Image 1 (tube, rainbow, N blue to C red):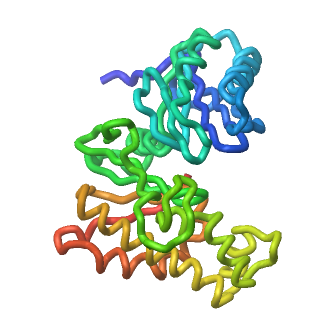
Image 2 (image 1 turned 90 degrees about the horizontal axis):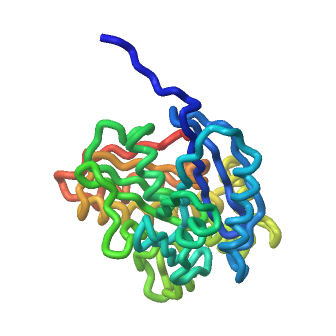
Length: 292
């Protein structure tokens, strides 16, 4: 046997994460090592958002070295009908039929692959995380929104138009709050960080200008009302996730995202609701937190 390795400077790639108010860009070597990264302000609602993104990437690329650039991967919070074409529909970004991949390829003259951000995360989990060695995995993110990536028989399940995994838009309350998708009572509109902070302000648990960090701090200090909001969010999430697990039958469920910083408070409501909602054959499915 002979130990082989990749020549790190044989090529590089750029990864991009797009959210409503900023863009994070990472350059990495062919061996997977991060070379540099940056976060830049970004206005997704602007009429020139795609060309602005292309300009931002132009600047990032110019500041790089001479190693051949193999291509760019872009993760977005929404559905991507075709990864190669890269047409994006996103309620979070306010984009409808935005031909992001086409614009970036034309402006940058490079291969561009566009994908839903949680699907991209599921791929990363399969390559580098706790999903390694599993053929059927459910990756769940909680934070600003609630999303899922599904790996079935070793492949990411994308669905008809790239929208598979929108667990945040499962309707859970018929007369619930308005969701950014236009529906009412979606899971995300009740347990997303913005929704939790809004409810905490309405109930006077936190101040009018405070956010999710203040609510988490109160829960850490033992505030009963703050912990109650997280308990309720965990309970709803557990019920919905149990139904999803019963449908897709994964080997493992992996939780991550900004919201897991508060998971100790979510878990009191989540665990009993989740386990009691599973059919007998699924009650031993492990649920793990990713520490990335």
